[in-house]
Amino acid sequence: MVTSAIWMRPPGTSTRWISPKTASLSGIKSITPLEMTTSKLVSGKGSLSASPSTKVRFPAASCSAPARALAEKVKEELGIGEAHWLGTSMGGALGIHLAAGPLKGRIRRLVLNDIGPKLGEAAVERIKTYAGTPAQFDRVSELEQYFRTIYKPYGWLSDEQWRRLTETSTRRTTEGKVTPHYDPKMVLQFTHYPNDYDQWDSYDAVDVPTLCLRGETSDLLLPDTAEEMRKRGPRAVVVTIPGCGHAPALNVPEQLGLVERFLNGR
Image (cartoon, rainbow, N blue to C red):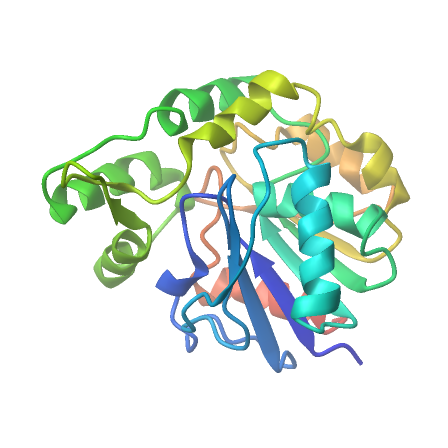
């Protein structure tokens, strides 16, 4: 029985803002959170509250480059044999790539949080607009208000969660400003590799149970794509999460319960 899970969020946010108590999953003894920018991958093994400690560096490139780095980390550095994969946005896109290729046979169950083999074009343009030129502020409180605006589609977060999200997703510039903690070059992937997220071939090659969570108003994972995911490849179980867009925060019992039951085969 597989009792390990890898949880990967997209650039710009961290699993560390979700407390271990909130994110505990029955039957899963070890959760390895992964965080990524276009220049590095960090992980904190064992607990969502752990500080990231190991790194893999790679250039801004197509999915194949970070996927190779991820596969190497999972197999060699982290020593993980088999595990479930829980990926939000880019983390889910990489999960599709890995489950179909470099980690085929090692990923036992796949959870895709508001991501599929095809992206909504309007969402890609929206992400390029704000992520390519991250805002800068004088105070962390101003950055928190900015996060509350651009991440409103996450759904409900408590004031404490918004504070923790901000604290764990912030860096200071050389000019002393505070700004979101990711490499804005990540958007170059959409320019240099415009077809990188067209992954129907990889999705069709996935042969493990797959759960897809779709935000009710998501503009990234469109309804037609989610419906197609039910019919082909691993024939994902698709669940719509009310009150969310891109992407559900996975911070409340109802959402985590769906993941927990799926990973335990229930």
